[in-house]
Length: 109
Image (tube, rainbow, N blue to C red; front, side):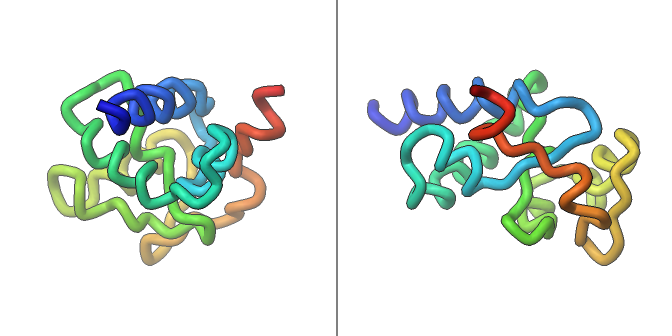
């Protein structure tokens, strides 16, 4: 299935996001040469929740909002995981977003 292959590519990139950093759905899509596929990256992150090694909590929207939070068990798990890595979150918004933002198109040359 074509989606499975795309999802695997998304997971490979997500696994490279460093501890204490975040990226966006769109940045992963762009890195994979599918710039208009941010929503598919979101679907891949949602499908990854039974895979412990995929740090889906480190993937947020382009403004630093925890838009995937409702896909995590518990009410605040995504935020708690990010905060445990030293990322400050207020009202589901990452603070100092540009400081913790990791862009695979720059970092993975």
